[in-house]
Image 1 (tube, helix red, strand yellow):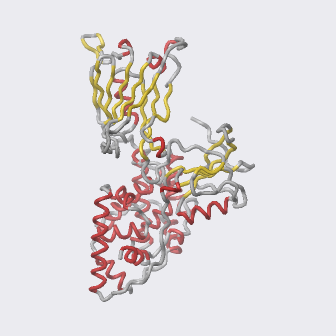
Image 2 (tube, chains in turn cyan, blue):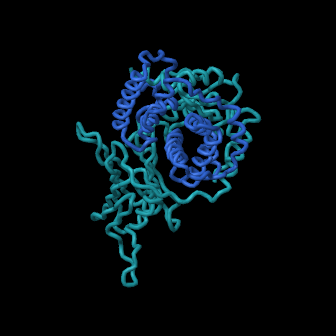
Image 3 (cartoon, rainbow over the protein chains, first blue to last red):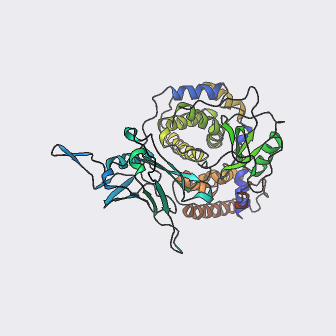
Length: 297
Length: 179
């Protein structure tokens, strides 16, 4: 019954997206966009906490030298270290030389995480981003935020990050802990990116242009753009193009084209990869007249 | 989100949003208003808008509320939609109101109609509909099951015992397609 009912409803659609001739870059689309963006600039982000599926609050444990503890609150004219801090996004408890952070809203603006770290003097940035299934609940990127404070040398200093993310058998949601240790973070700050399960259509943070086919069941490398797009349409997938030339070892250069840009149909696909659950990244070698890389801010 | 990034989302979601509005409004003018108001809200709340295809789902959710307000008689924004309306007037075929099936569908509760339409018109999965409606997938599955049963029952009551066979199927990405 179900499919017949759905098909019956489908037959009632008066318009299909493919029938619409109005384009975003046509007269109507452009004038509407201009009218909208002429209004006041977007307000800063404020949103209600939302639970991350499969992640009951993320806990980050930061271990560093006690001397690194910040001194932010004035007290009797002298600043004293905060022993705990909480905002809508996360809470931090100071336990000895460790800092245990519970993320209450894994989808919070990362600036909220940054504020919380700053309150206890930790120069850290935490981002929780959608990733490919094989990198869920992993640190997908970590590094320093800036050059060493005071120009101090970091030669010989250690900086280690670790993640503990083992749910007990039969438990689908459990805390995520990251441990940062080593004095180097006191000088350079910490930039931590943790992978989470991507929602439908969310672009994977770790999706990278590759040479060849990196999507099982898809054989697009070497085919023409027209053939590849037809195959994706047949599978109900969308696409986004990347221009560049990446070698098998990952070296080379590439840049994303504007979302609506399409190369001519006879050009050849050199790489294809899943960029979200329902879209595929396609790479072509750049030619004269193609979009150029956008300058980095 | 900056203006360039918003323009990218606008370009990627413009047609799906137009389709969503045109399929639910009685006139191209109303559809243009819904689209204009939806994108205007999205611009004001750009920092809350998710990235990737989830932006489309988020926008459907906004459009659904805008449509609800419009049906309650809210005032039109008066944004510059004249050129868009002109384009839509050419694109949109007229609604065929003579079909018994369409009449039965039109008499369903709004909530049932929207659920069935999100599946059949927008091609969304239960998970995606849950994102649009802000509820759990389980709740969507249950409501959808009931909506289909109510529609089938209403059709039988109207004397439509044998609905036409399937007319189209939506390709679905299998897990095995992923690396």
